[in-house]
Image (tube, rainbow, N blue to C red):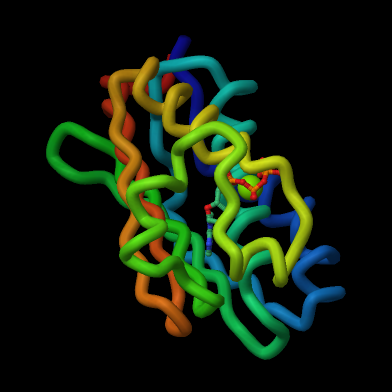
Length: 153
Ligand code: ATP
Ligand code: MG
């Protein structure tokens, strides 16, 4: 099924705006008018909820979470960038492992350690990719690509 991911992104941003506000984290968006994707809108919503939730909960007050999306030649690129606690290089290889939570993450917020692995599995099932870059103390950027759809039906 083809759907427009921009209203989905806007719904996620609306849902998390009060939560970000409670954390003292600014939520910014840079989105085009429309971006057609092929897939399961509910699973993609789950992906975006998980990633925006992580970005906010691992960012101390005063930080910024930026959500952007753009169309490249044959794919949609979505980026969720935070200015939070970051992930050390020794932990980066484990963040997709079930139940893994870094020591810093455990100090910062609660969680199960399941979200990111499930999130990457959903993206991979859609023919996309999920990559994470991070610098401890500076922040984390998660980049998701999804195959673009030809047009909205
Ligand atoms: P939940 O399953 O409830 O989402 P969680 O957030 O701890 O719990 P994941 O989302 O799977 O679990 O993330 C796994 C670990 O990766 C986190 O515990 C944390 O150590 C690290 N992590 C994920 N996203 C970020 C981020 N944006 N900034 C810093 N660390 C992160
Ligand atoms: Mg999580």
